[in-house]
Image (cartoon, rainbow, N blue to C red; front, side, top):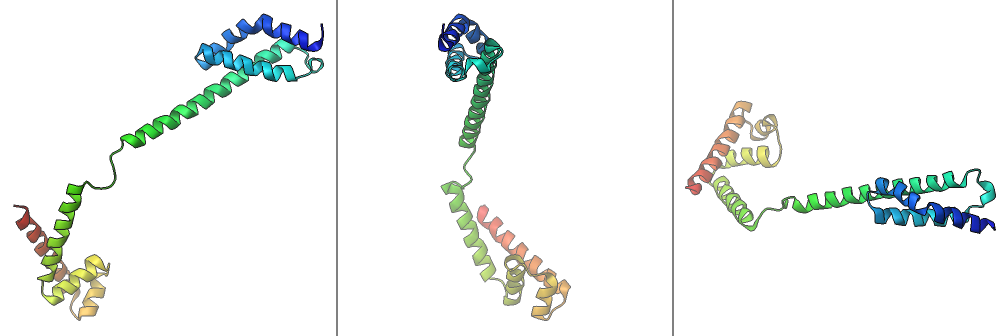
Amino acid sequence: MNEQGDKSHLFVSHRKALVDYAAPITGCRAQAEDVVQDAWLRFSQVKQGDLAQPLAYLYRIVRNLALDFTRSAGRSQRQNDTEELFEQMPAVTPSPEQQLSRQDELRLIAEAVARLPERTRVAFEMHRLGGYTLQQIAAHLNISVGLAHQLVRTALNHCAACLDDESY
């Protein structure tokens, strides 16, 4: 028998055992069949003279392909699980009701700030919107640091009171 015939005979005679060997690794008999077919394609390309133990080599090919399949399936499953998790996560964007509520709150705060005395408004805007320190505000307004702190606190309390009045 020629070399290809010997390999074919070896494969056909051990095909069922190879599928039985691959099935527990892949977890599916149909996938094991595919793995064994792929193994045959690879095995048939090798010159038999290069193989000391052709059957052991064939089993090794089946094992490696089955493990590759299992790893690949695991990665695909993890990717699918991740995509499902992202789909189930709540949206980061606020709902239309939340947007309206926030816009209303911003309007109320803007109106409350507009009603503040100028020095208090400037101190508040510098601190809360500009990120200035109390020392910088005091230097800008030519007042003490304690008074700058008091102006900012007064403005915050005024804004909070305006929001509380509108929520009832």
